[in-house]
Image (cartoon, rainbow, N blue to C red; front, side, top):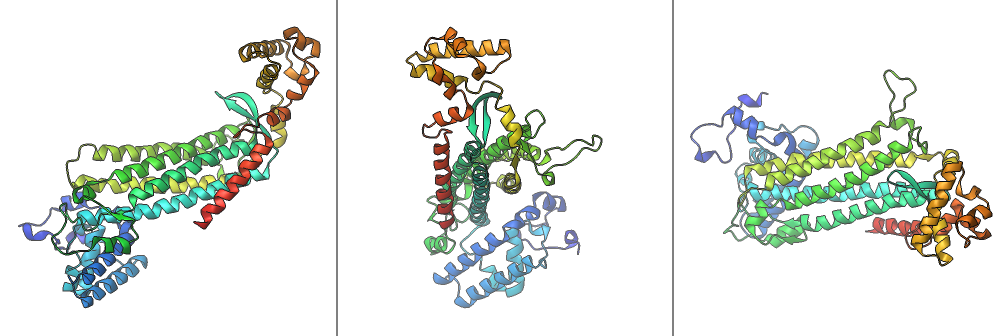
Length: 469
């Protein structure tokens, strides 16, 4: 059936003397993207109808017919039998019109004491509440993968970097748990954002509330909201909960992008720290030797896409007068696209981390270069009561000598060390190994083996606690 040729009576058509132009229908329709809100729209309508019955605004028979009809519509949608009509603009009007066609005049009573203005923001809040929980679960899965990496290679030592220059030795699990902590904060941000999402605006109507004797608390409880909105104008105009949600997703992508960048670097011949699974890489159409880290590169690239969704939402609301304006229809695509992008990126990163294998033999050779224990030498001198700045200078001059002579610090003789400082004794060699360096970093949050082991245990407890919530 060609819906463009079918005359559809608009629920708001009584005011108008001519039909909506087909160009306007196509331009204003949102059904092609907002139909994904059908579950939330039907749930909100069922709760609203139940409340109308409770308050004596519609009869129990009418309420039962409405709920039954909505259940049938949901079944048809999920079975792929429902015909969406562009002329009816959006998910709300499509479902309402289908309900009227099924149950007659009782269906026309569903919209009593509500507007599409409070209906759409209720649907959006319900949807984002569900997606917040789902994305939190995806982050949890990635944290489990990171923790598993930490546990599989508890004694692996790798170079730590600042400015992309080799700095100090760290444990592989310490590095993995650094990202664990980032994603832990991401879950916390989502949980905090969820509190402001989970406020029920239903009952605010178009902008000023309603004169009918509704029970907003009942409806909110039916839908699992924590509270009801305090101001009807703010309720229908507010989208800052969506901005906050997109900001949280943008930070998640920032963390995924950082992790992607390290995987890309580590998989190069120049680094050679890891071997990415073949299943998550592609080849070159011209260079047969290539193994390209396309998946981490795409995650890194898609980060900008989610940032764009956040900027689109901020720009959308920046100059809107009270209360509802049709501009707000544009919030959905940004939200949906960001959710889809973040979800896919989290799933892909979890799969990669789960199968990641460090190239231990090569990493061991790399540790011998870069003067990774120079800071330990300075700390050694500090323990001999030399002021840190002086100790730093001595260690720096020793490194310079090693560069000139093509040797590592540990290769110098004791006499050569004493030429730089008489405080240096035979015990200096104990601190010039990467193992000795690690053991010395025993401050809270440091990379000493016992400290990292405790961090692993703490992460296990935290993730188990998440499962019990």
